[in-house]
Image (cartoon, rainbow, N blue to C red):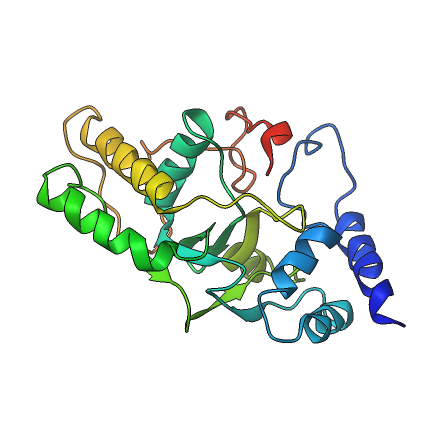
Length: 234
């Protein structure tokens, strides 16, 4: 098979996994062939990455940050609140992945270098209370990217999966200012909840307090939750 055929094969793998029923027709977690090509462009040998995905579409892969994207790594519960703000009040989001109780927000290159200083300034000014430590991955770092299709193990599917998968060869990516805004808004929402204090959960363990807001891109128990407008997918 030639390299030019690989994205087509990948698309078949990606899009045939979930038969689109009335329940999941608005799913944004299915990666497309164009999205796979964009992810592969992050590495030094995109064709090798595409070939590996063609052979093992259910396998996660490690990709470098800094060229195609940076990644901001946040605790899952706080990440849900950030994502709510981005979609409900902001410009939307770039690709989003879940990995071992954390949420990976794909961001514009350079975000990892700029965001920490913006957060430090906001904290000094007293506007950043309640924002947990954010891990910023940029040039010189690498992240584990979820597979193109879910693996056979239920635990694997939950540990490493796309929440908002890349759908184009040039997806829109939020910059540091947008993510700072979402983080501050999410922290403010937490502080303003009834009782003045959020329900406690271990940072990064992925467990959600009973009173935390639910959103529809997470696993099935979210019946009746609000659905993100797939037409806004970047």
